[in-house]
Length: 313
Image (cartoon, rainbow, N blue to C red; front, top):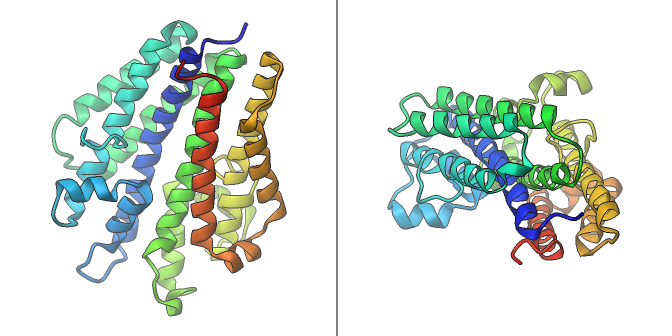
């Protein structure tokens, strides 16, 4: 029997916000690592993180200047920012409580405990940013591991999986966009030691440094890193992998519900686009423009899923 729309909605957004909490931590980690290479007094890397997180306007409405400490606090623990780590884990927990009977006991307890741990740790200004970012990644990994280890692979699992990978595709595109938004405005920097260090920082921020070395040469080349994080179907944070999982989960749901809808067509079109495109074509088209298109299409897919499965009914 198909799930009620509000249950599917709760499962989808529970997983989106768990993933968002981790991905925001990874985005902040990217800004932190890249800021170490900045020899000027301008916090350009942190500004780019706000832009890529889509919260620049919200930050500017609250603070008159771009200050790294305030930006980090805004992204990590500010409840005025609905995409902050703390806001995200709170919304995830609220949705999890709403659909608690659809979750295993272990999954709910992992989520609830992680919420309590992170809320307590973020009750005061962050004094050790790397440690807090690591804690966020550890707690979200615990939730994910418990979820994948105990949940039945039914439509409950599939709606959760959709939430995870719709959010992950968005995050990977945004983290990559940090690199090309404002970090290297001068063409002469491309291929320089600074450029290579920044690409290495991108890999570290998505825990992909070692797996990249297994697939490619040890040198950090922009061409290879784009290929790895966009087109590699075995990299769990790549766009290609995320959309393969989205298409698969939508396929399982279609068999349960006995019908396909516009969300299936959108997901399949994005999968085909990724299969028919390569790094050279993306760079020729414009990497920022390509990522911007992915983010827009990903948002449209999320809205189509909500509409098709009556999330708001």
